[in-house]
Length: 92
Image (cartoon, rainbow, N blue to C red):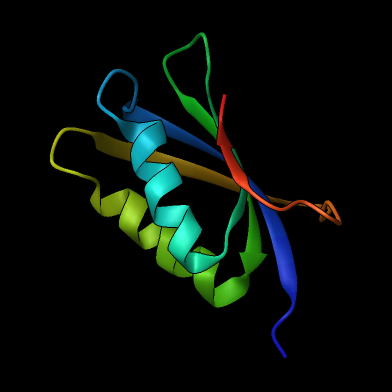
């Protein structure tokens, strides 16, 4: 069985005002990913993502591709401790 991991991700580019957080929310649910997406004051979006390694890889690939309105220039990814009991993905 695949382990659950958690990442803190900082997305930069054209990621605010273009549906990025909603796109992340819609992509996370079918993959069983929990966590959140939060706009930062510097124009980036911070995400915390928790799920199986393969699901997170698929999610990050979809985020990099985008929705036609957003443009992701960079994803800074850091592994952080898992939060037991987390059940959903939120847009803050």
